[in-house]
Length: 101
Image (cartoon, rainbow, N blue to C red):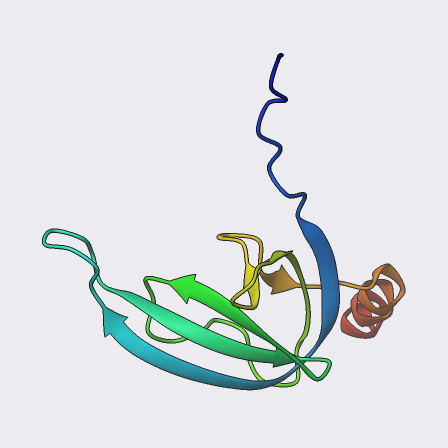
Protein backbone atom coordinates (compact mmCIF):
# COMPACT_ATOMS: atom_id res chain seq x y z
CA UNK A 1 0.00 0.00 0.00
CA UNK A 2 1.40 3.40 -0.98
CA UNK A 3 1.97 5.95 1.75
CA UNK A 4 0.88 9.52 1.40
CA UNK A 5 3.75 12.02 1.30
CA UNK A 6 4.34 14.19 4.36
CA UNK A 7 2.19 17.30 4.24
CA UNK A 8 3.72 20.35 5.91
CA UNK A 9 1.20 22.41 7.87
CA UNK A 10 0.13 25.54 6.00
CA UNK A 11 1.22 28.85 7.44
CA UNK A 12 -1.59 31.06 8.62
CA UNK A 13 -1.63 34.83 8.23
CA UNK A 14 -2.19 37.24 11.05
CA UNK A 15 -2.23 40.95 11.68
CA UNK A 16 -2.93 43.15 14.62
CA UNK A 17 -1.57 45.70 17.06
CA UNK A 18 1.59 44.78 18.95
CA UNK A 19 0.75 45.36 22.62
CA UNK A 20 3.76 43.86 24.48
CA UNK A 21 7.21 42.38 23.85
CA UNK A 22 9.40 40.34 26.18
CA UNK A 23 12.82 39.01 25.19
CA UNK A 24 14.59 35.92 26.49
CA UNK A 25 18.15 34.92 25.69
CA UNK A 26 20.71 34.61 24.34
CA UNK A 27 20.30 30.88 23.69
CA UNK A 28 22.79 28.47 22.10
CA UNK A 29 21.60 24.94 21.26
CA UNK A 30 24.91 23.41 20.21
CA UNK A 31 28.58 24.36 19.87
CA UNK A 32 29.17 26.65 16.91
CA UNK A 33 25.55 27.72 16.62
CA UNK A 34 25.05 31.50 16.64
CA UNK A 35 23.20 33.00 19.57
CA UNK A 36 19.49 33.65 19.15
CA UNK A 37 16.80 35.41 21.16
CA UNK A 38 13.22 34.39 21.76
CA UNK A 39 10.84 37.34 21.57
CA UNK A 40 7.38 36.73 23.02
CA UNK A 41 4.97 39.08 21.26
CA UNK A 42 1.48 39.83 22.45
CA UNK A 43 -0.71 40.68 19.48
CA UNK A 44 -4.48 41.02 19.83
CA UNK A 45 -4.48 39.16 23.20
CA UNK A 46 -2.58 36.14 21.77
CA UNK A 47 1.06 35.30 22.52
CA UNK A 48 3.41 34.38 19.67
CA UNK A 49 7.06 33.29 19.81
CA UNK A 50 9.51 34.86 17.35
CA UNK A 51 13.12 33.66 17.08
CA UNK A 52 15.71 36.24 16.00
CA UNK A 53 19.46 36.85 16.04
CA UNK A 54 18.81 40.46 17.10
CA UNK A 55 18.48 41.35 20.77
CA UNK A 56 16.10 44.22 20.03
CA UNK A 57 12.95 43.88 17.96
CA UNK A 58 12.61 46.46 15.16
CA UNK A 59 8.88 46.99 15.79
CA UNK A 60 7.74 49.42 18.45
CA UNK A 61 4.92 48.59 20.84
CA UNK A 62 1.70 49.99 19.35
CA UNK A 63 2.69 49.21 15.73
CA UNK A 64 0.19 47.50 13.46
CA UNK A 65 1.99 44.35 12.23
CA UNK A 66 1.36 41.50 9.81
CA UNK A 67 3.03 38.06 9.82
CA UNK A 68 2.80 34.37 8.93
CA UNK A 69 2.59 31.89 11.79
CA UNK A 70 2.16 28.21 12.59
CA UNK A 71 0.15 26.54 15.33
CA UNK A 72 2.00 23.78 17.20
CA UNK A 73 1.43 21.81 20.39
CA UNK A 74 3.81 24.18 22.18
CA UNK A 75 2.16 27.38 20.98
CA UNK A 76 2.08 29.87 18.12
CA UNK A 77 5.32 30.56 16.23
CA UNK A 78 5.92 33.42 13.81
CA UNK A 79 7.96 32.37 10.77
CA UNK A 80 11.41 33.83 10.15
CA UNK A 81 11.51 37.04 8.12
CA UNK A 82 7.72 37.28 7.91
CA UNK A 83 7.13 39.87 10.64
CA UNK A 84 6.62 43.39 9.30
CA UNK A 85 4.70 46.59 9.78
CA UNK A 86 1.33 46.52 7.98
CA UNK A 87 0.74 49.52 5.74
CA UNK A 88 -2.83 50.59 5.07
CA UNK A 89 -2.94 52.11 1.55
CA UNK A 90 -5.43 54.80 2.54
CA UNK A 91 -3.32 55.81 5.54
CA UNK A 92 -0.15 55.86 3.40
CA UNK A 93 -1.74 58.13 0.79
CA UNK A 94 -2.96 60.48 3.55
CA UNK A 95 0.61 60.71 4.92
CA UNK A 96 1.99 61.51 1.46
CA UNK A 97 -0.59 64.29 1.01
CA UNK A 98 0.30 65.79 4.40
CA UNK A 99 4.04 65.74 3.60
CA UNK A 100 3.52 67.48 0.26
CA UNK A 101 1.49 70.34 1.87
